[in-house]
Length: 256
Ligand SMILES: Nc1ncnc2c1ncn2[C@@H]1O[C@H](COP(=O)(O)OP(=O)(O)OP(=O)(O)O)[C@@H](O)[C@H]1O
Ligand SMILES: [Mg+2]
Image 1 (cartoon, rainbow, N blue to C red):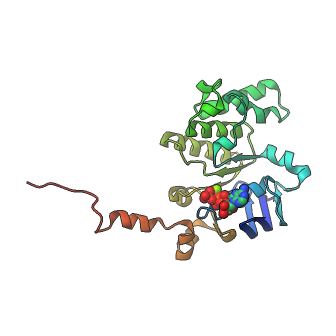
Image 2: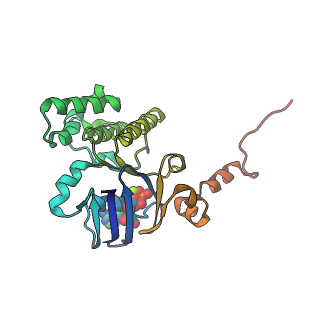
Image 3: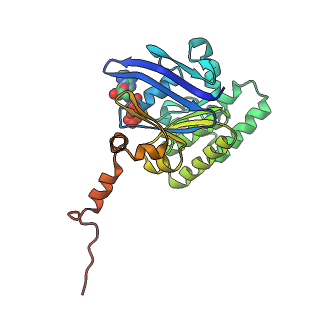
């Protein structure tokens, strides 16, 4: 098996939005960034891959398993999904209970489970919050706890929906390190972001959604050489020009 995820001609319909004929592959060990403007369908694709939504036609395979009801349990044991909004993800009363929930379902010894939870909470620097109610965490703290719950599972595939949004910079650095470590062990990763730093510097490949359709799936450099694709990602250079424009006062210096 060379592919972690294979989507073939996938369609899906919300009342006012459609995913149309998306075919996309994530290779084993590959790191792909999935981009597109707000509402282009990125989160919907992740939900389809996880079987949280059911496609109306086409097929999806995860780690060689078709995404159908009887495989969902095994697929979700092997795929870590970081939700865009961490409060959609955390449901146990306390941080400890939330992070331990996933690993407890893997059939490991209780010792191994505890070690994994301690390890994961240590990595995201939330060990001091084990008894904290999950609904009283800040946004960034909740995201860290959600990530701990995922890495404690040691998943083969990571789907990360805007993993860096709302995190302070040291935590972004730590998260990059964690994901790099997991990748070194062969984990396949697909993540969404609107931040060009990650798109240009940290992905093996790039997929671009445009209003429910896949506009591009290929090397990062090639996409940046095509202006129509750049505009589908959101053209940051316009913003840079606006901020540095001649008609825009950025600095006032007083002489004399
Ligand atoms: N539960 C839902 N019911 C109906 N329509 C929905 C639902 N969830 C999302 N949509 C619609 O589907 C479209 C795609 O939404 P989606 O969340 O996949 O976009 P996205 O690319 O992840 O956007 P963002 O960058 O804002 O996260 C949007 O038009 C949205 O309004
Ligand atoms: Mg989204």
